[in-house]
Length: 329
Length: 288
Image (tube, rainbow over the protein chains, first blue to last red):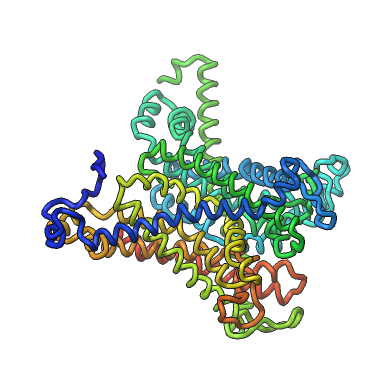
């Protein structure tokens, strides 16, 4: 093992311990044992990832064999006749995730700008802390709140649309006013993913060199022009990383979505329509799946989710790390 | 002075820029306010609805039959603690071990891969980890059990603990290690008796945050620990958990169950927020 250049912690320097000297320069027994134990613990993470991929693949194999690529495009999810196509959930996941991003990203960037550029110090600290608390509230609790507060509110919007002569004709807004459905899920997801974009954006904005701002001010730019032309472009890659982290969260978010999305296994046609996502269908049907094909199809959905979220997260980390060598998220 | 030198169109442009600037400031302040609104709404709602339903019975009694008032979720409170204990055994041992590896062996060829996987694991949905634990421990045992629930939570904990351990251990100054080496201590004693103790408060903080995070997870428990309406201390049988109670009770049609769900939500949120606050203000200060 050679010493590479920027090792912050030196390898054991001379003089070696008594034990090592006795062993003619070899590592002491304790050190070797310690190295082995630590290496075993660290390789657990490799084993776990491999095992997770293997188990998901093994569980989903039956469905993969039976339905092949048609699994991704099939629109029928019918456990009784053992016909399984995951398109309704893929559509549901994409719509909820990107809908939530559409709402969350501008708000998150706004909040990050507020915390890092606009707010006085005494306000910035507590606000950024409170934003992070949003991520600490458990998903089921958001779901509980969604059922009892958000859903009734959405229901009254639906009723208002139904009663409005101009809006009721638009197919995209048509729905049964239950308050549970795509729109409610998007709202709650947006709240849940804001802190991920916001905290990364805040950290990246703080890394923008002060010179960058001062140069723009010196040209007579207003504060907004400084943000718009000097600060935000500089932080763009990092903010994108934060957005991808939020996307990763949104794709896999389960409980809150399951509780408010209505759990209908069909492709959704209305903004307020009841549907399901990949994660929510697993949560909703896994314990009830009593045929091999059903269970295997659910696990296959899990495998797809696993692969997509790994990919999204790795890209996000790479973006964030490239910007900041030590990594901030 | 300058204003007078500007011609008409220039003055108009200046005004437009000023208005845009004011508008942007307003929008940004508004965005921050909108972001914090749901937090306030959720907390106010939980307190308003949950406080009245928390009493001694909530913590000491088993659930009342559906539709009847009274009863508690004592078995779920204990079950959550049981699952957390199981999860911590896995999460803390592997997590801290891996964190030590990443921080103390930076030139080991496996470090980049371990870091990458640990980052990737954080993003894997909890419910997928539930499927993995199901395949590993529920299928062979042929029934739902607490052990599989604990394992799924433990798997979720690992990457959070790795990151926290790695970060705080790298904060320990290199001179501290060198002082240990200068005394002739072997590497393992330097790490175990010098580096880890000086990073201890940070490791504890990170571990507590990881525990707080998984304490509220319901998704992976749905088909592993499964939940239980009765006392059960056997980890090889179904175990109850507060997040599961919140889920099943809030989608039930009974008002008395909704009340239990609101109380459970409040208890869970208070627990999680207290941990977060405590670690932030008590421990974080010490590590600087």
